[in-house]
Length: 102
Image (cartoon, rainbow, N blue to C red; front, side):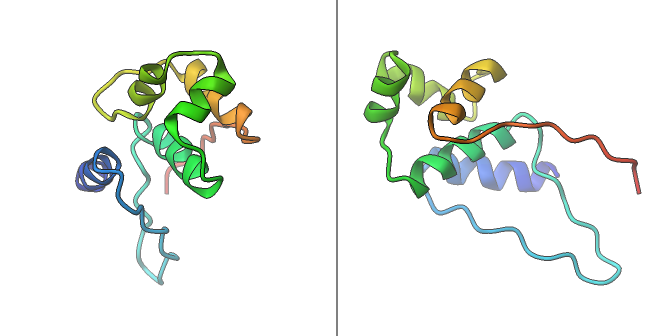
């Protein structure tokens, strides 16, 4: 999970393509995206899908553009409520799921 988080964090920092997850193969386990990174990736992907840049999202949220930059910065400890609000502006809903360990 640490290696996946590091790779995705670097890709996010560089504004690179984030690969889609692969399907689970027989006798293989899926590796979850670390919780600290998953909301930032969801926001980044929603922005890319809708072709929304930082300035436009900031305008919609009524905040300065640097606030959006921080939300997308893997090194910045952004409050979940801020990312949740940004996702809502983009028509997304953030949920948390807890499953039994395999």
